[in-house]
Length: 352
Image (spheres, rainbow, N blue to C red):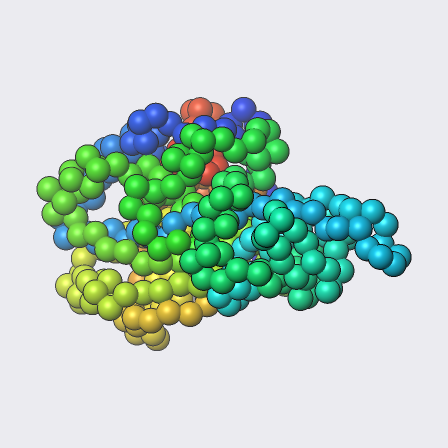
C-alpha cells in the first residue's frame, strides 16, 4: 500500500499538550467490529469489558533520555566547541547506547562529548540518518543515576516543539504501574489508568497481566518510504513473562478475549505468537510491522490513543479495524473534539 493512503488532516488545536486531569477523565471512542462508533469516558472502560477478558499492559518505565552535551574544540580541523542534543533510544550494553543526535554534523567517530566535568561519552559509530552509538564513562546503576541527574523527560517532538518539559511531565508522562526502566517514550494508552480503575476492572472480573517493551525514539521517526513494503521498522526490546503467557494461552483456549493496552503491548504479543497463536514466553528484540492484510494471532481488542497521519501506528490500527473504518473514526474524533497523541484521548478498538 502507499504510505499516502494513511494520511489525514489534523487541526493543530486537536494536539494535546497536557493530559486530562484526573487521568481517567479522558474521552474514549469505542469502535465496534462492525465499525459502529460510541462515545465514552475512560473510567467507563470496565463497563465496556466482560468478566474473563484479559487486559495486557506494558510496565516499562520512562527515564530522562534527553541529554545535552558539549563537544570540545578539536585540536585540528574541527572548529570551536559545539552543543549537541541527544535522544537515547536503545541500550546496547551496560555502558553503550544508541541515540539520535542534533546537529549530528557536529560529531565524528572518536569524538569525546561532555555532559559535566565528570560525565562523558565517546562516539563509537555514526550513520547518515543522524544516529550515533555512544560509550559512556559510567556503567550500570551509576550510568542510570547520571541520566536521572542531568537528563530531561523526552517529550514527543509534537509537544517538545511547543514547550519545554517540566516537573509535572515527570509525573504525567509515566504510568502508575511503571516498573521496568528502559523506555524513552511512555506507553501512552497506559497513562489513563488509575488505582480506582484497576479496582473496578478487577471487580468486574477482568484479568490483568503485564509485558515489557522498552519504547525507542524510533517510534516518532517519520515514514519516508512511498510504499509501506519499503519501510524498515525500528527494533525494540520486549519480554513476555511466563505467567503472562500462561494467562493469555488459557484465555484463548477458553474463548475469552485478549485486549492489549497500547500498540507496544499488541506488538509484543503478536511478535511472540507461534503459528497456532500460542504465546511463547521469552525476551528479545521485535521489529514487527503491522499493516492492513496482517492476520492477528492473539489480540481481540486494543485500547490506544489517536496516532499521527502516515505513521506506522495508524497503519497498525487500520490493520485491526480496516482503513475506511479508522478514517471514519478519526473524522468523528476530530469533529467531536477528541484530543490527539501522547497526552490525548483514547479509543477502544475491536478487531474487524
